[in-house]
Length: 230
Ligand SMILES: NC(=O)c1ccc[n+]([C@@H]2O[C@H](COP(=O)([O-])OP(=O)(O)OC[C@H]3O[C@@H](n4cnc5c(N)ncnc54)[C@H](OP(=O)(O)O)[C@@H]3O)[C@@H](O)[C@H]2O)c1
Image (cartoon, rainbow, N blue to C red; front, side, top):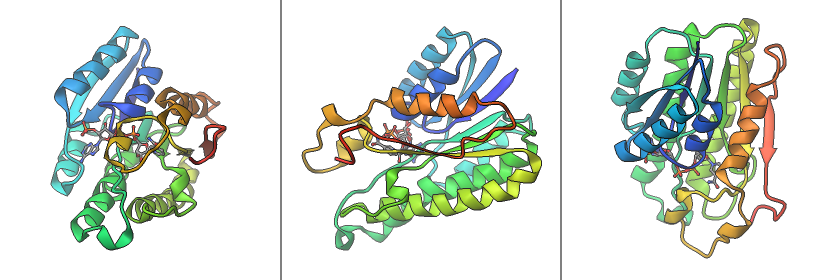
């Protein structure tokens, strides 16, 4: 029985990842805050023959993240997918300290706590996946707090890759470019959704990396629309 955790699985890229990885003999731990949206992900996962367990925790609160890790427990995970994320997009001088710190909490501190609590139980051949962004490599105007968080997660993930390498745990980093999901609803401006990738494309990249032989690591995968960064 495989056991996989996907954070931020209530919609968007996370939901597609969860649905892609669902199959007979798999338990999907699907996380998010929106109960009705999570119920829809559960339906998709169960339709593919997997068992689904929902986890509703707010990643802004470190106590909630700790509780989530406790609820997941010591039964080993075969894959831990750090997908949940938020984007505050505005000029640097308009970003509030609260927005900055919240972005750091959800996008970086939550993955840190979950990895620290859950990786010790993961077996050789297991994988930790980080859904980063092309903004983990390059700064874009208006994306300072988002890029700060993705660069930080990039640094953490690279160190984790080396710390976990001797245990045979793969650390897989995915760098999507613009993907048509609800994250863009809060972004001002005229962003062409029709030129963006679908969440399914990013999920397929995750599935590809996870489906390699256990002794092979697809370590860094950038996925972008041919239309470019938009
Ligand atoms: N879309 C893109 O263009 C793009 C490009 C590159 C990278 N990414 C990355 O891909 C990941 C998924 O993004 P998406 O585009 O699928 O966004 P989305 O549709 O907005 O989904 C975000 C997910 O994160 C969860 N989440 C947000 N805040 C949370 C909180 N405080 N506590 C718990 N869960 C929280 C949401 O669940 P609830 O609302 O139910 O809590 C939701 O499931 C993010 O890490 C994002 O940075 C996206």
